[in-house]
Image 1 (cartoon, rainbow over the protein chains, first blue to last red):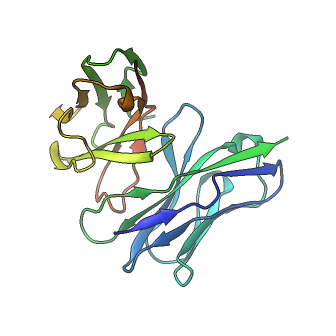
Image 2 (cartoon, each protein chain N blue to C red):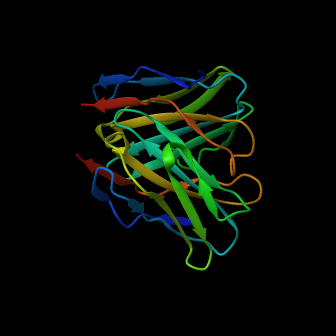
Amino acid sequence: AQSVTQLDSQVPVFEEAPVELRCNYSSSVSVYLFWYVQYPNQGLQLLLKYLSGSTLVKGINGFEAEFNKSQTSFHLRKPSVHISDTAEYFCAVTLGGGYQKVTFGTGTKLQVIP
Amino acid sequence: DARVTQTPRHKVTEMGQEVTMRCQPILGHNTVFWYRQTMMQGLELLAYFRNRAPLDDSGMPKDRFSAEMPDATLATLKIQPSEPRDSAVYFCASGLGQPGTDTQYFGPGTRLTVL
């Protein structure tokens, strides 16, 4: 079974500074990877996803993530954060082939400091 | 702007009472998911429907929880009887296509408090 680890439960960062949110997955087969964002009192929404092809994936709101198979990672980055990026970010993984349950990480709370 | 709707947004009830949560998926979507989010357990998948048929409810406590899709525009999650440990935010999500690769569109959630 697949699993996903988000080592950082909280990440404080100053406004306009760069940020990286870490995600590592565990699977012996091909995976599909996702980043979702949850703003306060809202449901999750997709930031970006990796299915195949280029390992650098660009998403909404200036975020991007890079799939690294050798390190089994899918870290999320943004070169300059805004106050509005304050939210909780979830990495998720699923296996390829037919129906597979999506497994979510425990989330990383990004706090942007003015 | 199509979106998933959930009712009620908040529910406070007493232990032992029945709770029904409703979800209207995005029109045309053929997959529906129910999740539960708590501080301790994070986001857990409770049930998954495709074309109104339940395909996976392995994450759902069978003795008290039930999930149905009476029609394509309505999904329900019932808890009977409710217990304080059921207190959580319950999310419904819908999608179109293969669940392994498809984007899931989440509703705003129902915050349930069982006293």
